[in-house]
Image 1 (cartoon, helix red, strand yellow):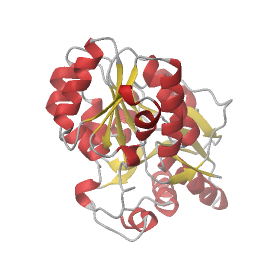
Image 2 (spheres, one colour):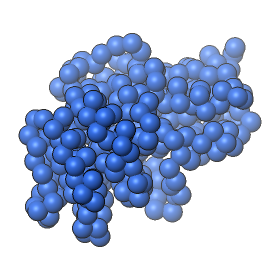
Image 3 (cartoon, one colour):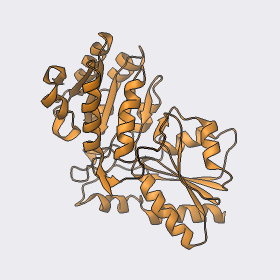
Image 4 (spheres, helix red, strand yellow):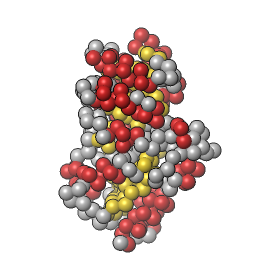
Length: 309
């Protein structure tokens, strides 16, 4: 079963707005794509179209937060985090304001628009900011949890969303808590730690490894920051090594967060992610995942190499 994360996000945002009159939405001329359009259509008095001006959008969101509103500010992830970084740092995170930033079309998922629209560094830039919570859901179900969890945080939150249909991994009974990992599959030899779309790819890699007699545990991190080191160590069990899997540069994202969380009790580790490169256009999403080494085969190979060492 597949579910589109943006559609799931729009449904969750609309439900939240129906329950809380302080929820407002801002967008940078992309409401149809980011799905903030659901607020424009159903609660137009709580929707603010800011045009192609993410810096101003974040500044206005900060002002709305100071007035008691819960602003959700939307754009493509590359623009939501890159263009207004100064405003996010100075006007939102420094005073610890209750602003939610939603970055759509993350990573390679905007395959048609190329390097300018593909964000490989947003997890890194957002998680270095004090007070910022960073969420990266794996499927539509977790996206809905992330919206409610973000609204419950009294402070800045960044939500990173893929634009494509992704496999559904969870159900309504799966526990979700900010900072806590979810064990998706048990295993004893190696742990494949994924976030976003890479968690489902890690599951596919685990199936390949099972054919080689390797027992792979799959752990999902829907939270990049804060990350509870104790919970992560418990989720990893007694594996011999870790492979982190992310649709993001290997510098400063999931792999770095995992290594930092485990620095007092480290394990051998390899990182599967985007190397020191920019993006490019392609005819489909899968073509780019293959080009950048974000496949089940690449993850399985990394695990085999790690265990051989």
